[in-house]
Length: 377
Length: 249
Image (cartoon, rainbow over all chains, first blue to last red; front, side, top):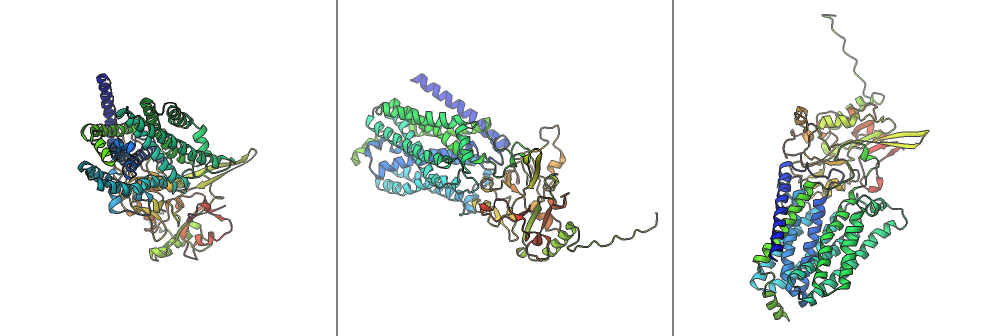
């Protein structure tokens, strides 16, 4: 156990150190080392942003479910979910910050906002949500259950609004046929719930391996949400492709059969959906199976986000534009560079480090939950 | 020849029968006498006259000191038909200066806005570089300034790369991460030239006299005449953007 811990600490240190190199590159060289350009303007970091926002909203809604609807079987997870939500949203915003051309002007969204922009709404919602999370942690710590419940109740619409708004951020762009669909906000909310629930299942299997009742409920939740997510995805793909004539056809075929076909088929469908479903059906009470299923779904959800952000930009708005002017920033293909992966590694290391600190120094998985649980039951 | 004075050239006529450049210059002078809000700048591109020389692209780059990856007016080159019945069509693509611009409402800090004369402009000092406007443009008419230089991997960065740009009437030298590095950039109909009574660089450099510019609110102007023709089109009318760049086909 001690050896395993040493290996994990070592891996984290390496990841953090490499990540710092990426951040230094970002500060020293701006965007010059990134792989995106002026036609594919958003890359890995924006996908990571959408991913971490989903994790945050999903985790929060989980904690809210426990506290507002009194789902006591999941009560031990409540504080863990809350803290995970806080860490995830912080990491998401950090990802977006690195993506800005002028990081020092980010405050302009507060000082001179344009409320016709979906992005402005998102930033303001994140700010409100961040304050809510901090207040919740404060009242949780002081044992003020009345305030905790009230804030969770207020937080539910907020935590539905911002992943939904994240979907709307893409969907409102009529220039991109793949993004411009009313299903997107709903898709993003379901994705948030799924990735958040999956992460909770993974954490529960580590910290509460003996709570088979909790693991069972988590496993079933993940199973149901995978099914719902796949139904939505089927609608998203089958409707535009059914007659083979639609503006989205080219993009969808890129996802299914293009250069990165394996991201959809192998990473998302096999590793992120089929294997977790099989594990959850096979051993629904088993901590390792539920944990692996949750971890796989939560981790591979980044592939789902990548398959939204990138393919939406890979078809020229005007035919022939890709050949009109030769420059490596004026192409419709995109592969994240090592620099971008290093920055992502930094974000993940910071997130994991913050979670570790929380688990170590905050009363997230201690006996107080059991006391609260007893008080409610 | 010493001591012999040259006779002055006869004044060039600027009426409807004059060279289009002279006529547009006269149109521009008239427009500048009006308040900004009463001008309606439009561009008309005659695709039948465009020969695909890319002079406009290059003139624009030179005028605005555009770095690698930033282009305001590429020319799309398409081949049509099958041999032996083939032809090529060249479509210059400046910013459409849409009357319903998708790039304006998406900007989270209102750094991009529609001027009273119809030009969609960018406040470089406010733009945060989120690139939402670039994603929103249905014409791919915006590009991001990544802070790169053409000669940065050569023994010496050439002085022309540090020459100032005068876009929006502001003198700026690209250096470090200062704006316009890290900003979205786009064609602005050479506003800085217009304000000084000069036509956009792409118009004056057009070898085939295929690009026309002027005030569509002026019934005497060349562009007013051209956009009333039956063979006038806009790009992607279905996008509902109401472009101010028209094409004669």
